[in-house]
Amino acid sequence: MRRHERLIEFALFLCGLVSVGTTVGIVVVLTAETAAFFREVPVVEFLTGTQWTPLFANPRFGVWPLVLGTLLVSGIAMAVALPFGLMSAIYLSEYASPPVRRVVKPVLEVLAGVPTVVYGYFALLFVTPILQPVIPSLAGFNALSPGIVMGIMILPLVSSLSEDAMRSVPDGLREGAYALGATRMQTALTVVVPAAFSGITAASILAVSRAIGETMIVAIAAGQQPRATLDPRVPIETMTAYIVQVSLGDTPAGTLEYRTIFAVGSLLFLGTFGLNLASTWIRERFREVYR
Amino acid sequence: MTAGTTAADSAATDRGNVRRRVLDRLFQLVGLIVLAAALLALGTLLYSVLRDGMGRLSWDFLTSYTSRHASEAGILPALAGSVFIVVLTAAMAVPLGVGAAIYLEEYGTQSRMARLIELNIANLAAVPSIIYGLLGLAVFVRALAFGGSILAGAATLALLVLPVVILSTREALRTVPLSLREASYALGATRWQTIRHQVLPVAAPGILTGVILALSRAIGETAPVITIGALTYVPFLPDSVWSPFTVLPIQIFNWVSRPQPEFARNAAAASLVLLALLLSMNAAAIWLRDRYQTRRRS
Image (tube, rainbow over all chains, first blue to last red):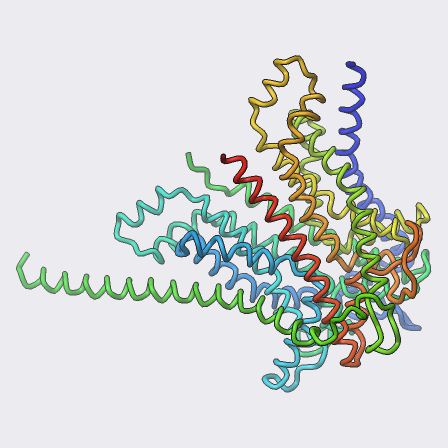
């Protein structure tokens, strides 16, 4: 009987270990292939070069065009997601009546659950065509519309996490502000938002991490032309879109081209991992604790 | 203090109050507009897909193989691949995820190892899905030589959704009252007997809700499945876990990438099928959650 119990506990422990194994696997795989990559390409060229043409006859391995492309699209996405997400969070937390909240929150969840490939379709075949008459120099593939659409995709994340942070601010603080004669706007902006600041910041950082790692919207609507530019009207390529581009081709394992996706993947992993850690750290470190 | 200044003061205060109240109203209006804009974005997205794809939706579209001619192409292999892969993903992710959650919640809450696993899961949940694709490519496709098979795809997706399954299962286990466990122990049941016969049945609807949501994420994923080398043109149905395969999101991606507008309409129609699939899964999860909540309250 006791042995039986022990055996089950051990089996359950092994299940838990799979998740640790996943992390170890990711780190080992990325490190091994990236190390092999750097035996052939100098680290300095990879990190400082401004030309990315690994599939050409005369390959160059400067990752900056991919990094800039990623930052450009993510920047546009955040410019949409942050103000809209925060404003709707304030509205839902401070103004909306419970019935409104009960209807709106699930709808926003649906927005977050739409597959990214459908968002890609929307960016390429709906947003770009309606933007082109307004911005005549906008190319068919560009950074602007995937950026905007990615912002729409991330908005529910910013909104719901920020709203959670605001709603965990105790009502006593709000009532204190009202008693001093503050309006709801003054209460929201000068009491609730500052009190929930760590949670809001953590949510925003997590959103940046999501934007950087997002793949299909940019693979569909941003193009496949790595170039070091901050012009949102021309085709670019992000780190994630490059990995997709190579994966769609027939690249044999062990070649330098095959290893490029792991090198780019490593950079992507380090970036998002750093942001996730920062998000957790800020939430824990700067949380206001009310008793 | 004279009467005059008091009157002037109160007039100023009144003006200030009016200004503040107007500002407050304006602010509320802006919030409402922003929220409406977000909902409008969702509406526009659905509208654009419906407008482009509705005309292509037919029984033939669901039951035909892909074709070079857009008007004859269907999504049967992609639909079959998606169903096949989601079942296999569930078969791997559910036992592993529920097992891990039980360990963390019922056995190892105090141990150092459990804390490490917990931290690790929180971080894994935020790793971009394409990184899981690279992991699957190196481990399942190459090292274990599964090739670009359904097995490799399902294993990759299982690792991807594992954190979601674990987190939601723990949430469900936490709602089971301690008194239930104590009563079971008092009757002489062992730990596992208590979990198996008391805790799991009570937590089951909550666990199921989490599992459905995790699987609906797996069914919509594109990037990791492309990375492990799923095909874009599959003229046959998968017949075993070793079959090459395609899934609905890849089929949509493939059609969107073509310049001809006829293929774009196919992509929209396939998106409608995918959205319908996801929506019914989500509805099932919400229905389960509501049923569960009302039962617990009564």
